[in-house]
Amino acid sequence: MVTLETPRLILRRWREEDIAPMAAVNADPEVMRWIRDGSVRDEQQTRGGIQAWESEWESEGFGLFAVEIRSTGELAGFTGLSVPHFLPEVLPAVEVGWRLGRSHWGQGLATEAAAAAVRFGFEERGLERIVSIAQVGNAASERVMTKLGMQPVRETVSPTCGRQVRVFELSSDEYLTTSR
Image 1 (tube, rainbow, N blue to C red):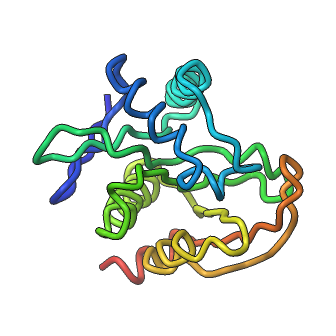
Image 2: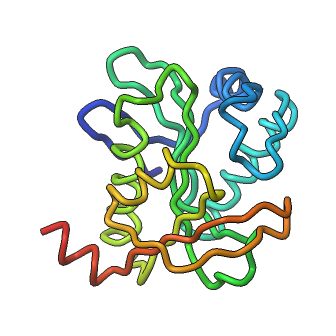
């Protein structure tokens, strides 16, 4: 089982006790504002999502990590890698994504967590490129993407919700140039 550590975070696989705190994150309308159509998710939907994320680990060799605060053991949300099936026009691709509870915003934790996931993707899984997708207007996520060294490469409409999205990208060559 893959576990990544950063100065403030532990990125690890999911546990049963993560369902309730992740469901609380998913139930916050402000957190979910930029996710698909903005709908919140309940505990059952969260459980199904975590099961799907764990399945992706088995099929792809990567997936979404539970993000735990090292100092407290609290679940902050998730980050990691997934195949963005919801946007077929960018496939084949692997996306880095994140979702943190509102109490963890504005501290650089999303960038810290996502940077560890990007490093894992390029250095441990040998990926050629990683994308990240944000709805147009989600300035906070775009700032994280920029901090990761990603550049915008296209705008399109997400077929899952009809909203405009912006696709950012980072190649392994660009990553190696900027990370050394």
